[in-house]
Length: 347
Image (cartoon, rainbow, N blue to C red; front, side, top):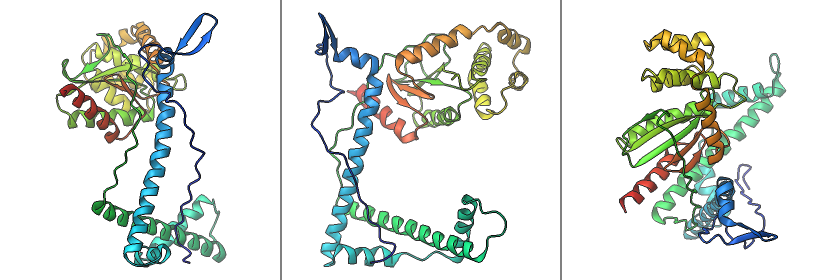
């Protein structure tokens, strides 16, 4: 057997039959009774619906991963049978034997990375270098074999599509509100409203901010964005940055100012905030008065309180027509929810 054969072993916990935690409960069927009082499913969904969804989506991902791996194995077994070969011989013939060995330059580059991770000091001796190169060859070969297996799988799926019938848990809807004081961009009658709770000092929020720009381009005229503040205690200058952005909003420059904050997250001093205002040609006196009066402190605290009430547990958090999409996720994850909402609007 080849030293580079890939063997995948899935260890899964026993699957139990349990009632869905995400079941709809319009009648308020009780889940517990305390004396003469009842605790209902609907009460639970209202208070911890987001946490329940996150637990269900983790279970869904586990099941989906197993299904995908099982489908992959079945397709490979069918291909081996069609070729009149054992699975082992088919893997050797179609995957391992068709992998191009790495070049010496590739091996040396990866070996250097290995030595750096091992924090090898000074010039490595011959034994250290040889060991690192052996590890590099193994890593590169495994990568090539994995890529080759992926290529074959994609070709097999084209001929025999894999349809996953597992139902994905639906994101719970939350009645997320906002006030006229919150910064808004996009058409007032847009079919999609995205309310973002964000922190200007959070690197993930910067990525989420850029993704929102991509969404605006992908869905022209269909998205209304609402920005709500959620500065974290762990980011000491996030609150001041939120105040600065809202003060810039007094002069119709919230969004350009927000761009500057996200682009300069390492420079959040008072002088920096003033510099950004000057670059945007704001009335600096008015800006400074707004900052010194802490005009927006209560609004920011209100945003934080509302965020907690709506189920925000970290930043960024996006509500797409009330459906929570937490974190700086890829564009396609947001697009999936947006497309579902647009389809509902068309019905």
